[in-house]
Length: 138
Image (tube, rainbow, N blue to C red; front, side):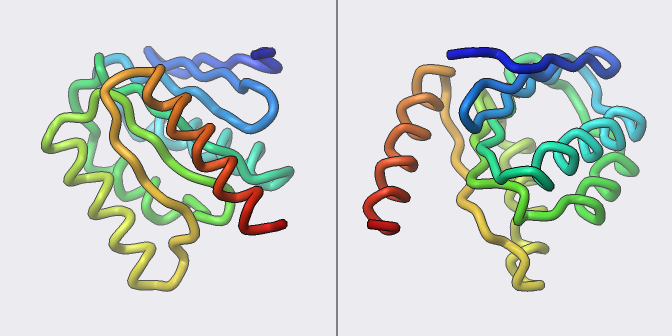
């Protein structure tokens, strides 16, 4: 587990772990400025190679409406191998699923979305996903 880069935006942090995981930790509210920074980071990494994004929502509180709209309009699902949410509550799951639904209806959804309780569960899930991908390719 080698951390290649780290970012901080507002109260949130992110770091990239080789070979293909972006870990995002959300603390408190997500503002429009946070969403813009996150979207730019997702694109910067995703335009090089698709990756898994793991978002820890354990300490998250709310998302501004404008932030949610920005993400839904500016995220390219092709950037991601999969999305895993740690500690998502009912409302957070509903928001994530509604964004996925929008992308699915437009034919743009290209990755799976999962909800887990811990980082360990996220790591295990990604390990299984990698095995499934390697057997599909072989």
